[in-house]
Length: 419
Image (cartoon, rainbow, N blue to C red):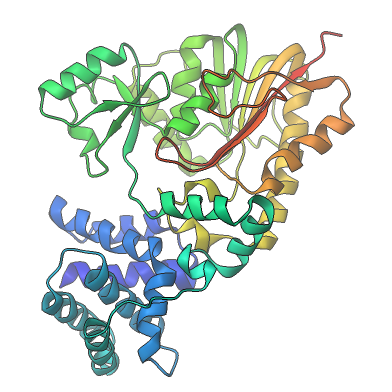
């Protein structure tokens, strides 16, 4: 019962307080003693986020008044178990009713009655397009107008699936794959050169070689972004660096790599990751990339992984569709342009900069880069390496949609003229 009660609170926190799912889950996990319970909690909460709109359309047929946040969470949770999880019907209803009884007993009878009606009915046969895609109405319309309904349907199809866990091998990928397979781990090579894909419920810290720093968790899209920046024996700045996955891939390919991040709370995790990976001489500067403490023209290479709405991470973080709105897209796009302007000032003549975001909103992609290029005639797109980036375009910019292979992301390579 405790897992379901904690799931209700986590769901309500995301939907009604815009709390990140992982933040809510981290709080809840502290109250659970076993990996099994913690894994169930994640499946329940992420499942509700992934299928929210079809779940809501299912149970709302039997409700007249708007339920409280916790009662809504209970209806979503119960419907998820009835429709999507291998939970016996009576157990799905009983455990959910007991969970709401512990939090809001006055809503017990209503939740019980509605879930019984869901159990006795077939799922709705007709959904509105945004419901079928499990996207907020505004987000569906925005993507439909930008990409077309077929592309949105494809994005939704991938977002409905639980993605594999992606790691980057630091060292020989084949030997690490062989070691894991020998240990009975279902591991397979990814499309990115150093990527290995694992089952989503893999206990990462128990992997052979984890404590020795032989791999780091980073999705293939982020791996491609780091590997797209050409090697250099000069100085590379990794702006907005935490938690350090891209730094781990940049460091061995550059002369010196200096990390920068503004958030003090993120630095311990960055340092822990870099230390576990055995990376020595890894300078980190705590500073705002909008006001970088470096002289102009200092860097041969720059990695700018800018703050964004993370709209490309729907399959891995299905809560992101509830955490931002259209106004936030505009605010972040303005910040991204300012960050890109500052980064270009730090770039040497002849230097190359990678601008990357894990968002597929056009406003955070080419619409950030093109105005900056218009204001800087000395900066031009640099060709993307097509062997690293599927569907790469020769203009030096590519938007990759979520797929089985990777999260959605955008990357642009820009080079400053020699003189």
